[in-house]
Image 1 (cartoon, rainbow over the protein chains, first blue to last red):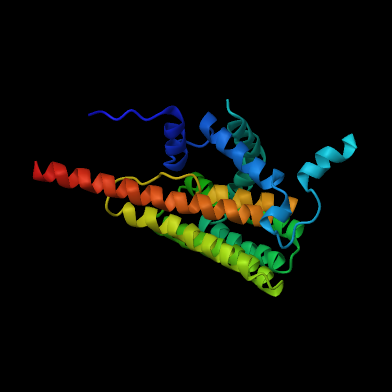
Image 2 (cartoon, rainbow over the protein chains, first blue to last red; image 1 turned 30 degrees about the vertical axis):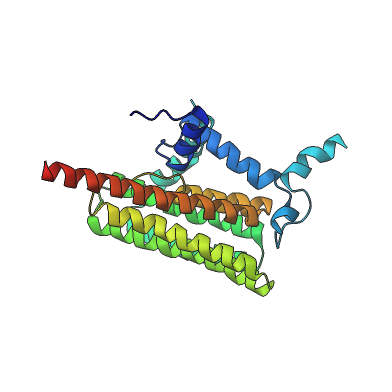
Length: 65
Length: 200
């Protein structure tokens, strides 16, 4: 019997079993996701030993305050 | 054209000038590789002292050498099996040096949790290279998984310049585990297929 994977399952599997080339659109999305995690996660959540302040997010938000 | 493709092309302009200068000066690619690791040790030193921005700038310089050695070898027609081996071995030293710098920093800060995260990230970063090298002695190609050396280096730089090294360590750790798993899965599948064909 043929198994049909749902779209979210396929997306998750493809993100885990990575076969895409650099500079593909899938690569761009992965890079965006990583940058979002690195820059938008509050350092306190990760108990970052060295980070202080809001970092890149703060640089963006400061002029708006 | 994708965003990462565009960034890659933009970076190639200054790099091409450096490559041309090295070719004109006939600097041997193996020397460039060695200079790269020495500069990376300086970056590790700066990381160990918590001078992240300085470390970031030193990493940029070090990795220019790492990046151009192969291209200079091609242009000088100095491509050799030993050169490839030397480059691969020296790259591991560079990788390990940066992780050790961070491990030293976190241990001086008394943060055993991040000493462990960084040590595990280092282990899986090395296993990423090892699994590919070992797999390619058994199957033709084993180039799967996201977190390869260029991605690691760029992440180190991003972490250093924006002082978000903890988040970067988590990303390197998790994606390196996935990459090692991908390579084991691919090798298992390919070998099973080869055995199946041999039996049939």
